[in-house]
Length: 281
Image 1 (cartoon, rainbow, N blue to C red):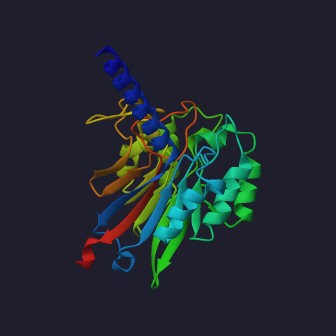
Image 2: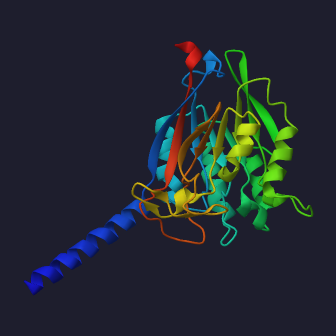
Image 3: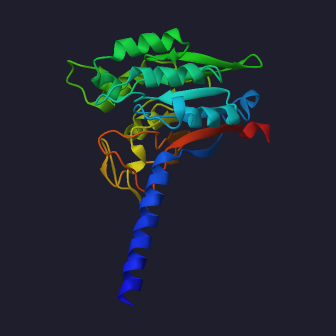
């Protein structure tokens, strides 16, 4: 009986370790449908691949596993919402190599995260991203067009880039958003920070794509994420779709890790967002 118990414990540990390794070394595709009355019918079924918090991760040779996902999904655009590199072990080559492949699949739009603000190599990174064809959105916007109809894609820098001002991060984002005309069309916002969802709602943004929370790092059944940057324990905005009034926010669990190297019950993900116009029904 004792030998059976020991064998069972060893087998259980082996299964747990194997599951942890597998769940940290494989990338999940998450499908999310976002519906809106404001979306022009021309953009019905418009597909966005959303990637965040890469942190210099590598899945397959030259990130072939993630590139294969993007090729198979064939999105209209690819949105990258910050922390493409990690300030603790910045590797520009990994980031640029991935984006060089991604721009061949679909137009890529990128905004900064806090780790870009913290690394001394950001200027070099941005220069190389622009050189390979990535649209870097520094507190600016880009019109997406389909069948002569346009919607606005807005991108804002992470508030960590704003220095020398006695302002809260939330007020920095609020000030940035006030500088845009956010009434003229369907608005998609790329912003690294999910914790400021109320600010996005108050700014009447239609769709916000964010990251930063790493899915809560350790996800507990029926509860969700355990801890997230700037949200602390049991973060409210950790993963998935959040809706209030006419604003939808999608929070990516991200691809890589930073300070904590292991995820539990929290697979890296590429989110595929399909826009649906309720006017088309």
